[in-house]
Image (tube, rainbow, N blue to C red; front, side, top):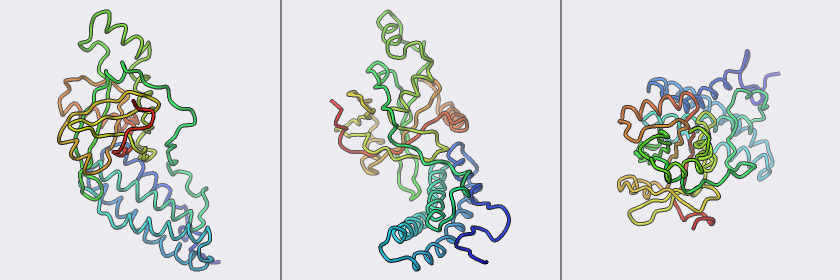
Amino acid sequence: MTSTETSPQAAGADPVPALIAEAFEAGRRYWPHDRYVGLDKRLREEVERLVPIVQRRADRTPSRSRQWYACTNAIDAAQDALGFQMGTGPLAASLHVAELARRIIALREAAGIHRDDTSLMAPRPEIEPANPPEALSLGVIMRLNARTWIEQDEKGAPLPVLMLTYPPTNWGWTGPAAHTAHRNDAGPLPVEGVMRRVAASLNTVPPGAGVPDVGRRISLHGPEALLWFSGCPYALKISNPRWLRAADTAGRALLLVGLEELSLVASAAEVEEYRDSARAADRLHCALAHVGRPPQDAR
């Protein structure tokens, strides 16, 4: 029997799961651009191979049935992803190859390729956790350090980035009142514990799991932007005019949450080193947030 619709490769072990795992791994670290280019080429070839297979299955399926919609939707999304060119920056490139990998997963499912063949694929992240995270206190939010910059997305358009970190616990905040605030809000937890709460309150995930869309999290108010956390009536203020203009234009921003402490006076080189090492160790959580009205539980 020769059926290319159900067999991803003619013979031997299926290499596609490893290809997809490599695409998701790109979100964990910055690679040389040539490696992204090669990965993009291989992912595109697999998408182009699968599209006619899924199309033939759709042609044999009753029109407007559930399976027909699954096939046509997978094809449309894949062709849309193929229409984008990979950005030149490592962040844009990693987002791009991860999206192509997700399109391959959808095409394989529509083609009837069993999930057992995709055991190496990264799971789709849960955007809404089963148990709501503990609401952040105002003291924790006040001690967060926000760093902003602008990169390019897969279309080459500006993509504003907001990275949250926690300063060293002994950084320039002394006296009884400061000690009490830190004890009550950060508690005896190490910095990692505090920042995992911050990551959970924004529904961010480690980059290897893909980049989830967490909906409206940022609202613009004149010369300021506010970042809102789940179940919390307080927001973090951002006042970088160039970043605000980019967020207003793009309608979204990439959120990064570092689990390690970082000095408030870290240099650009130190910040870049922090970001690279944290991504490689799965200690820099991420998510895409939209710009819009504040959540209902915001004051």
